[in-house]
Length: 257
Image (cartoon, rainbow, N blue to C red; front, side):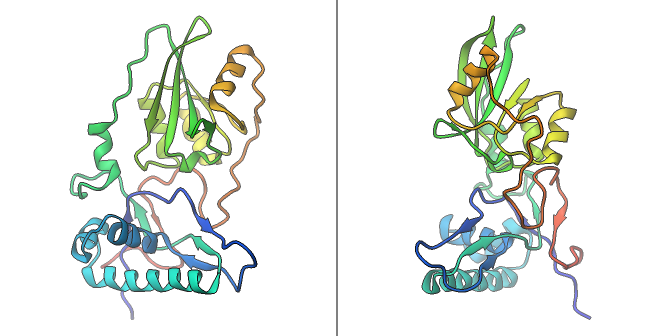
């Protein structure tokens, strides 16, 4: 009887989860699992050795090498044959910023690097999912928030804060620690909505367009939002909130070595 495979630790889920060739696609989609994506990120992008990647992901060096070879084959297959590449699934668990993470793990750095201006006593703080001036449309994958401090219905301070790889349900805790009172965003899943509600953060979802203009519209009482917003961009086996420290797996056990 085969031993169940160990969950592969990954730092964060990718911001972009599909790549489609221009022109006419050729053949079925190729699925690159998140643990395969993480190995490519660590070795090819961050230039870690296979041994260093194995320590980062809490698996053996041999397993890393096997994952690496399979991931490179899938990427080559997609590029050469013009097949859509979808990043989805896998046998993994999200990193929680453990002290034994390597220095390149963004969650390990966030507590040292992220500095958020303290909110005033009579100040309301609005956070907006942010990407290049606009409202980022997938809450769980946002890499930045723009934060606005409001007094007497006027913006008195603005700052952009980086999530450093945190995603989905963990972002509610991130916003709570940032002292946000209101979130303006695009799509957002039910789990994340529940987490925000528990943190006492009021949600205005389903908003599109320029972030600054959306905040001004909120202050003017003209913000166009969707009270029943849902996130439907995934479609590959996980919800938009409440990931926590659970292991995600595709018909495989997550215990053992």
